Image (cartoon, rainbow, N blue to C red; front, top):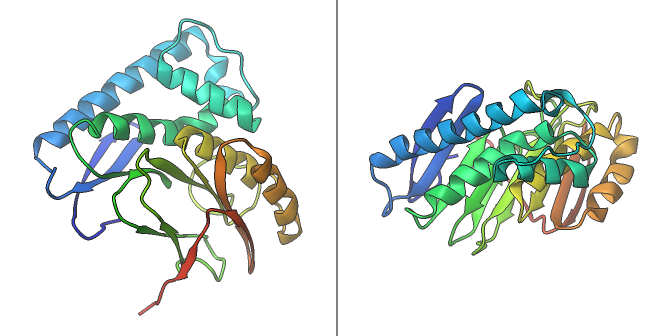
Length: 238
């Protein structure tokens, strides 16, 4: 994603692979170093917690936190518990939001993408392309995201694309929420419920029922289901 008027850079530390775009007026070369330091700090906090609580890394179910814990760990557990999945289902979205909010002290607008999970705060509408594997909708649709002063998360889970664990076969389960950790966890949970296109309605009802979920888009093969703050635009392929 390289929106007009933004400057992009990357930060890769271990499994954390961020693609970051900030408004051109706010960009300085020092942002890359600042970002890497924040990622290293958060990874250290998470890894230290997992040493005390190894089940945190492997459980696929809601988890009981062992206090004390860093706010990043708490955010992952809370999101997973609300969605009914393990805390690691929220790891990518949580890193995107925590790093993004740190950067917002230095920049006006930001988009942080971490393995298909996005935290964003922009001052104008932004289009996000939807990739859905072999579905005929893949690459042909975009989400139009209006500006949100407080920022928001747009997270995608897929059982047919990418390395992330999914128990389902959804081509794309996209969740919009003010909480990026929650969007990530609910995307996983909703995607887990989709084996065939016949499951889209049930998965949609589940995602709609989760407090603080603003929008849902589910895609399986040539079928889709959508709800809430989802505005779809066609993408013209050249």
